[in-house]
Image 1: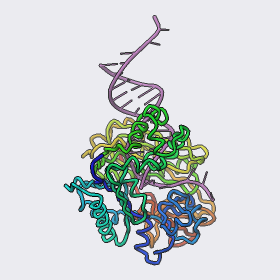
Image 2: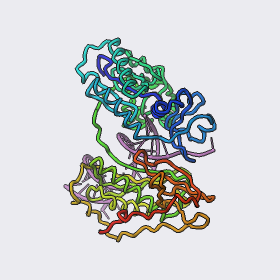
Image 3: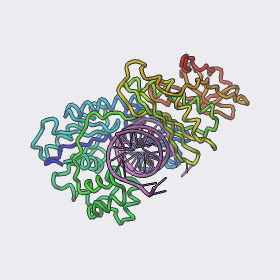
Image 4: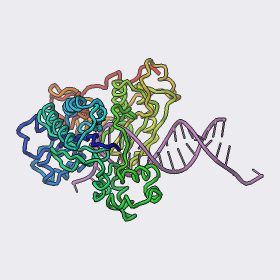
Length: 442
DNA sequence: TCTGGGGTCCTAGGACCC
DNA sequence: TCTGGGGTCCTAGGACCC
């Protein structure tokens, strides 16, 4: 806590949808929904026009479609969002060197790090307005909402109060009163489970929370959570704005259009995921010791299996081998809807391959054979690599009724666009798994 | 009409060590 | 012969965030 409202929280309004409306003028003023457009997709962002129909983030796309059938439904274009985000973050860094991005569309800014002191509420209001204007210019027309306060907690909550395109400055000294009438769920970290437990203790508002002793709170929600919640309730928050946060894990996961039971197919998919994880580790100059495989069953129960190596690796073959072994240990009876592969216990880059052989498993690497599933599908099966002259390389995602659904791998956004073809479409051709996907030595 | 993908942090039990 | 105490690492699961 400080004596002046020098922490800013900036939140771009309906970011993904706003970028799409910026790039496609015909969508402006109309409901736009960005997210997964497949059978099991969920909404990432709904434009304000779509929110009028009750469309919300994290809602299934199917439900969104039933609520707002005439909206434009778009898959995400992360590369474009990333570029826009970088331009916006640059404007923030021009204001202060201490900027902490929370995601592509959110960041904290610490004005005190810019040497600006003696700030009045009006000063902060003016700074926020100038920043908003700069962001709109740099992003090609997007708007942002800004909250300012004496801590991250207050700034974050304030930015939500006058969305979109608003500024809320909470004066120093008014924080506890500002929070008191709000629901406990405004406090970041209080989700449905915690809210439920608190409500059983008679706590619904922050004012209720302020009355509860720390001991009682710890009893209700656990040690770490209870202690921090007790302080946040009275707006005692001295968490610093931190510009460079270390990556702790890297992972890839996919939800399948239909549940998969076939172990060989899953092994092939795990292999592919291991390669993608390794590629991202390499780009970030990271390597890690713990490989985790995540499975989600048809009933949505989720399991993880992990294994820690003696030394860090970013070798796709090592990650793939461990992942396949973990997958063999996993129960997939009844089929799984999601598979994920991740690496954690990260270390800085290991220059050479010194440690990659430290994994004790010396069983030979078997070649994954994809199952033959011909029937009426002209030899196509899920997981198979294909090539299309217009769309490039992809792989079969789903199939049936004489049609195959293909995911194309673009630089833009894994997974790339999904397209459906007739099995006898002459443009679509099968490609072999590239040889480098399989290790040549052990 | 069921529930994405990328993360972070916390808890709890067991192994292991001194 | 009937039971330490603390610290660290590993594993699995869960809550939460955008």
